[in-house]
Length: 267
Image (cartoon, rainbow, N blue to C red; front, side, top):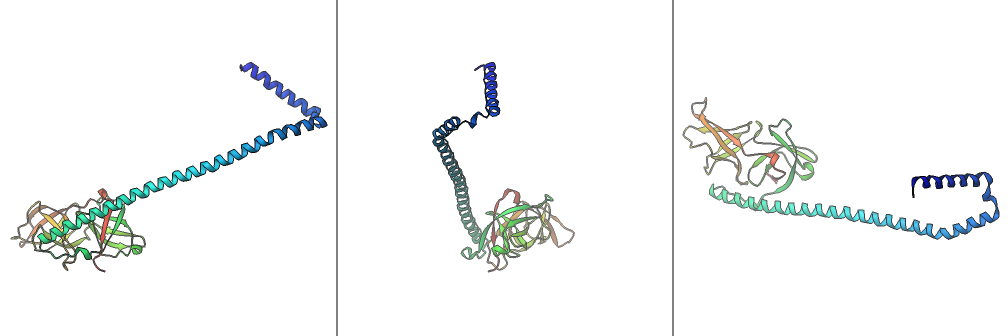
């Protein structure tokens, strides 16, 4: 249909409508009968149309609900697979720690370790990684002093416990300190945190401590296996004539980790 013909028909329809309106043509009885008859004919079609629309709307809602449910199932399956993988990584970690404990002649009872899995949810905004915040606090039974680790190294120690989160200080933090050993040596030192390098304290001049040696955190009570803190970056004669100055580069990189393990130091 051309544009001119369309406009002509539209004009005729408008004129016809105005004619009906002003002449009150619809008041005639036979016109009302015709209108009633037409309504009777088209009523089933209108009802069918409404029913069809309602059914389509219900099917659409059911489909959207199915899609949302399927997406949620996919997320749950991925989460389950992640937790299963995490559990396997933890078991491998415990096996490695047990082997390391035997090499260092450190008594360990891994079967008695009480641990939980958590997630890092906040980083130190200064960029120095002095602390992180993890999911879980008093609601999970976390306590100050709990050890936070990955499968290979120390992430930190729980410093403050809130209702549903906990603040963990890392080996970069000056408030972090622990008993440590170098390699497989049984001689114990004190590691004190620092950024970008921590310090290994009370290292005598005659102690064989070399650059590149690994430094492990150990439990003086022998209830926890050793965990890697970092590697020795620098060894030199200190201001004290009886001790060396030993700098340690922490292994921790919280921004590359998502899940961590919280190990209870006490029941």
